[in-house]
Image (cartoon, rainbow, N blue to C red; front, side, top):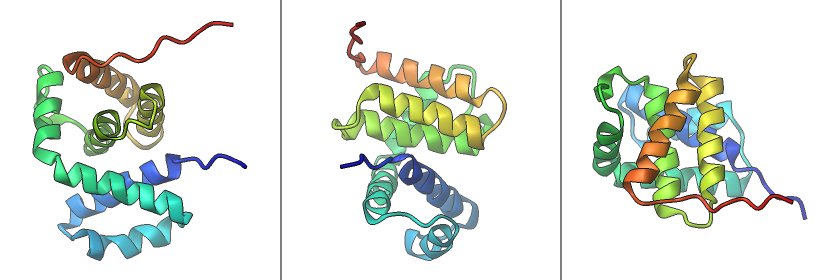
Length: 145
C-alpha cells in the first residue's frame, strides 16, 4: 500500500490559516474557497484540519514561543507565510508524536522555500532548531549504513 503524502495537507492548512488571517473569515467561511483551489484526499483534508485546529487552539502559546525564538524580530516583521509555516511545524513537533521531528522540520523548510520569501527556508530552519532546543527536543540520531 502506498503511503499518503501529508505535504498537501500542510499546504492546505497554511492556505486556510492565511485566508482566515487576511479576510477575517471563520474556518467555515474560508474553507470552500481553499478547497476549491486545492482538492485533497479525505485523509489529507482531515490532517490539514487537525493542524488548523491545533494552531488555533494553541495560538497564544505558539506566538510566545516564536517571540522567544526569534531574537531581534517582532512578530509583525516576520513574513506571514513564515509565521504560519512555523506554527504548523511547531504543533506537529509538540502535539503530533507520530510525525517524526525530521519530517516536520523538512516539510516546513521546503514549504517556506516554495511559498515565501528568499531566505525563508533558512529562517524557518533556524527558528525550529531554537524551538526544539528550548523544549529539550532532540531528533533521533540517524544510523549510517
